[in-house]
Image 1: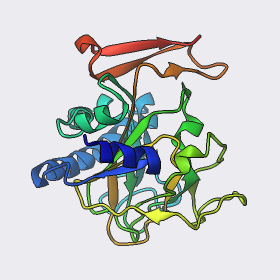
Image 2: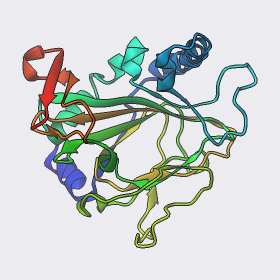
Image 3: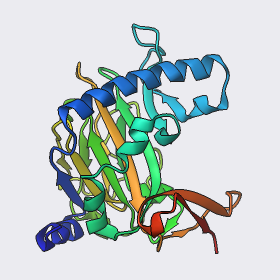
Image 4: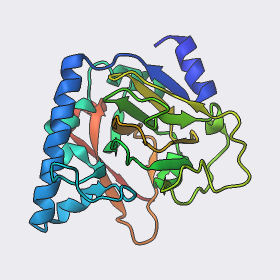
Amino acid sequence: MSADVQRFFEEQGYLIVEDLLSDDELDACQHEIERLHALAAELDEAGKPEARQFQREPHAGVAQRDDGLPVLRKVENTGNYSDLFGDLARHSRLVPVIQGLIGNDLLLFRSTLMLKPAHHGSAHALHQDSAYWPMDPPTLVTVSIALNDATPENGCIQVIPGSHKWGLQEWGQITRADDAVTSRQDIDISARIDVPLRAGSAVCFHSLMVHGSGANQSPNPRNTALYAYFSPQVRYTPKEGQPRERSFPVVAGLDGRRDHTLVAD
């Protein structure tokens, strides 16, 4: 990674990676998303606790698609349910980019599919990821991979460049039925920009970056594979009542170990 690219990320808080995935990889992802919708229906019908990892779109107005499968907003911990999306976190073109930003040893904090179904995908108000994550210092990198074209019309990511320097703040509810940018009155949103992406491209951003996305009222879905990475130098700081230790998958480095456990101080 060039010094100019690193400097841009440090100053602006985000970085676009063009054409990360091939057309064949994108086709495989779309087929896998359909399989996961069917799995969600099976788990729900069987009353399995894992069904909670498949979250319905709360503002769709309908519970099911025309084919009878659920209208999903997101799938958490995708590596537990999909080898394809588990492997995507370790993509050979993606890992070197993240290493260039936060170091050679990489742990995976989050693996999620974010889904904005056509006509129904809800807006996400402005927020910082680290405001909701028990990690200190808040220096994780989130990667959002566009699995189909992400546009302002179907709710692409919006960022406020440089806002990762604002410090950690509180944001409240993220998912919204309306298209309000934020409920806070003290945020200047004039610098907010859309980050449209071609299918297969990605945007990486600092976990303190203030970002959100509009609602999808278009006829085109916006599906995103989202991963968050961090260095083992980051500490796990759970809130009261949460487990005092947690294991994270190793993506790269750490002598090839599969997992790495962090214990709260």
